[in-house]
Amino acid sequence: MTESLDLHLEFDRGAGSPGRSLENALRESIRTGRLRAGTRLPGSRSLAADLGLARGTVVQAYAQLVAEGWLVSTAGSGTRVADVRHDPPDLLRSPRPSPVSDPVIELRPGIPDLGSFPRTAWAGSVRRALASASREALDYPDRRGLLPLRAALADYLARTRGVRCDPDAVVVTAGFTQGLSLLARALHRRGVRAIATENPGLAPHRKVLRAAGLTVTPLTVGAGGADPDEAAGQAALLTPAHQHPTGAVLAPQHRYRFIAWARRHDAFLIEDDYDGEFRYDQRPVGAMQALAPERIVYAGSTSKSLAPGVRLGWFVVPEPLRRDLGEVILEAGAAVSAIDQLAMAGLLVDGDYDRHIRRMRLIYRRRRAELAERLAEVTSTPLEGIAAGVHALLPLASAAQERLLIRAGHGQGLHLTGLHGSGYWHEPADERQAAALILGYAAPPAHAWRTALTRLGQLVQQNAA
Image (tube, rainbow, N blue to C red; front, side):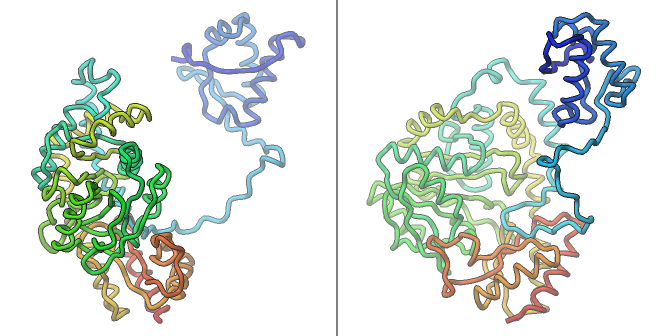
């Protein structure tokens, strides 16, 4: 097992005994942390061949370092670096760890319950993908994504979100943000220079769009979602099913007016359906894309449904954009892992993805209801936004109160996010703009949820305006 390991060592072969030089090089690598505790070293035969030394020289060097305590040799498991824990030089010395305290409870928006990731189903799908993958599937992939996943997504999106598409319209990406970056570059290539986005909305998305050379203009968000009268440029980015962060649904009349604007100006709408599967008070609102598939790019991902770390997204792209987007993907080398694509296709085809969504929908529905009930005990201000997704909005009286609650929450072990001070507004927020806590109720692990509710209720009660 150890014979085939590689090890890079630098030592002066001409400075005295080769054995001593090898010992010094190994000591230095261990002392500086380049070889960490537990690292398995190559077998003496392999290392001797790599370094051009006699095997006996390596055996003797290993034995000397074992005797000094730098290495540990165990029959059957080879030679490993010992846990020496020598102090590093002053410039590299880390501060002493602080006393252990309770971990911070995450209440950030946009994070699902990571502990509920379907590990068994995913691992099984990966095994099946590896066992059945064709040679062609492991070659350089189609820039749009593997056909099995594109076909499975086309079926799933048509069935669950009402999207009108076929596999040729689907493009697989490494999450929504990467896909947005590629799409923005494709739009710029077509001559688009300005895009409208929701205000408030996610600052990282505006940053990605600007990096692609697009000017970003604001769309004021009200009770009916983004205002179509403010649409400008030749594109708009929307979250119609559940606006982030306010939780509003784009009103039907606003949908039709955005589509009319897009058709009139030869523009495109990007529908970010980031948590469209999770609606708790009624059936999820169907995708806006079905109203104008020739003008709307539909986008989704696994970030809220599975976990952000999976890094899988999908875009349903109108025919006029496909060539430009494909060229941008090729230039960027933005292909997604074939094994991950095949595993995701397996989840969809076998029904494991549907089962996971239904299970999480029940969990998140219960959590949102419990959050609303707990806050109703301590404040007369109800949560805003529809019962959907993995976050809710608690309006506050002022930006000062928002800052106070966030600071106080930190002291009680709660990681909170505010509407006023977290970059949601296009322009730097001033004291007149709306303030709120954006509460991510999916993020706390199951064992910490009751504690999170208790601390949050106490926090709001103690710091009421």
